[in-house]
Image (cartoon, rainbow, N blue to C red):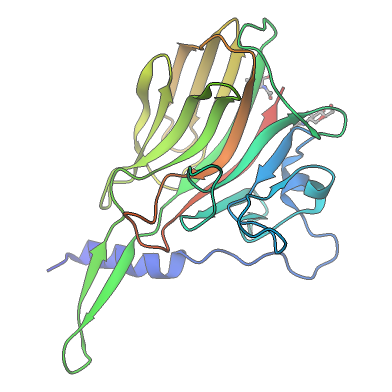
Length: 281
Ligand SMILES: *[C@@H]1O[C@H](CO)[C@@H](O)[C@H](O)[C@H]1NC(C)=O
Ligand SMILES: *[C@@H]1O[C@H](CO)[C@@H](O)[C@H](O)[C@H]1NC(C)=O
């Protein structure tokens, strides 16, 4: 028998999971680029292709990004943030995981790939205010031979599943630092953690409640990354300086890089990150 609380969780999940459709027909819709003021600093990588090229990850940079919105990348109903919705069935870059993720750009029109040195003395900074929502858990309705509902079985996505909501990537070396929400299991929420090439993993907040806003401030200079995390609801604070591998080609990323695969999880599992503010220099 499943407990009342699990049943309640299960019923909530049935109404909370659907992604919001793309923008309405209102003139000049508020697009993600306008709400977050991307300032020529970002391009979006999507977990879907285009009609012309359905199997290739679609990347949208300026000027198309200014007016772009989609079911994977849209302003929330309250107009307070941008939702990055990534189904685990999304297409991937080179056999990785699907992502709805911003990549740092540069240049006067935001069309050049940003690439900075860990050794630079002027800090490269990323500030992001975001929240992570549940990955889908699945309710299996079990009917008896008379067609009467007998039980609701709650199948949670594996506890090792996670979404990476911010990263520093090196074009030559790969992922240097990744910030992630690890799902802890039934009704247990998440742990917010950082994993680094040089220093292993640290827990920033052991009991992150899904949907609570946090700020993450990163500042990279002289081969050191200063991390400052604060959950605006629980007030949990975490700060640390982490060494960076010496590399000439780092870039910031932010969004929903979904580490939930269809190998082990149902095909309607997903990751969802909402970003309310983002700035980069
Ligand atoms: C965008 O650029 C303007 C002008 O340089 C600056 O004032 C503003 O703070 C920037 N906004 C963000 C979110 O970076
Ligand atoms: C990030 O936040 C810190 C602390 O408020 C501030 O000093 C810094 O200028 C911010 N950086 C960016 C890129 O917004």
